[in-house]
Structures are given as structure tokens and as C-alpha cells.
Length: 227
Image 1 (tube, rainbow, N blue to C red):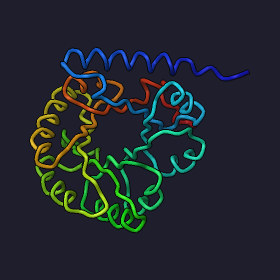
Image 2 (image 1 turned 45 degrees about the horizontal axis):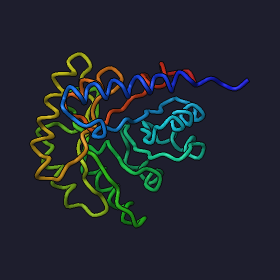
Image 3 (image 1 turned 90 degrees about the horizontal axis):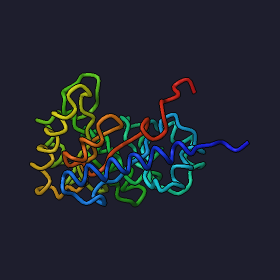
Image 4 (image 1 turned 135 degrees about the horizontal axis):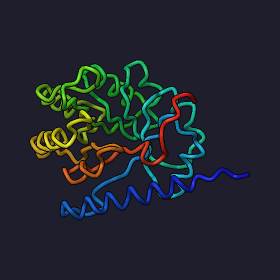
């Protein structure tokens, strides 16, 4: 019997409606926000169903998992959104269109080296630890300017914007702080992507100015970590 993944389509329509509503409240065009499907622990056939329903952007957290699934995916754009070790960059440099989790000059330099070696330019976002949490990756807001300046001058990369994962308990406060930080640099560095908002706060993030929301559980259901 064929698997029934219709719940994914229903969830996607609900997410789209919530994004439409949030955009309307903020006086923004619905087209100004992209919906990313975060695929951690999700089987390729379910991801492909989402692609068939119109999802055109996937977010990958783990290099090894991505490599095991990428050849099974239908056509879609893929971004690396998880913490990325420098020794893993070589495995994804030709398979993703953006790395959203750049949080150090060391990682930036390795992406640059491999992009140049492979004759390509990699779009990047700088990940900001807006809540100052020890458990999360990301550069401190006060150190961001230095990383942005370095990225803007680095061969083989194209600086596109910022990404963050705010503390869940006060996400609305930190989403607002992140938007202020983004606005303070957007003009100077020609930024056009603000990646913030996940299953629990994407509608608020859209109202705060996010241009890209990353939704996993809200689209695919609870994670099956015992996979």
C-alpha cells in the first residue's frame, strides 16, 4: 500500500497561510519570505512529497546525513544550516547553494579556499548567537562587524545576510534584537537575507522582518530521533 504523506501537504498549506497572515500584518508581500523545509531525520520519500507540493528549498543540519540522502532527493535548492566543522566543508562545497552557519574566520577561510578551488562562489550567512547562549553556535553580536568585513573581502564567497536561533523562551524579544542588528548592517554590506524563525516562532519572525523561515517539525511532524 502506498504511504500517505498527505499530512505534509496539509501542514504546508497551514504554514503558507500563517506566513501570508504575518506578511499582511507587517505590510509585506508574501513573496518576500521563503519557506525552508528542514529535513533532519526525515526520510527522502517524505521530503520528495514536500517538494512535489511546492517546497523548493531544503535545510540540512548534518553533513553525513545529507550525503546519505542527497542522491534520492528530487530537484530542490539545498542550504547547510547546521554547525559546520571546517573538515566537512569539502564534502558539501559543490552540493549546496548556501551555507547559513558561518560563525568564524577559520570556517570562512576554508569555504573560500574550497570554493575557489572548485571554481565557484558560495553564498553565505553569518550565524549570530543573539541570546548569548553557551549551548549554541554563532558569533557574538559585538564581534559581528569584524566577521562581516572579512567576509565582504574574501574571494569565493558572497555575503548575503544573517542567521540566528534565538532563545525559545524570549524569542520575540531576541527576534526584534536580531532585526535591529540586521538593519544596522544591511545597507553597508548589501545584505538581503535574514534567516530566522522556526516551527514555534516563524509567524512572529515574519512579522519582525525575517525573509527565510526554517520549518521542520511543523511540516513533517515530530522528529524520529530513533531512526
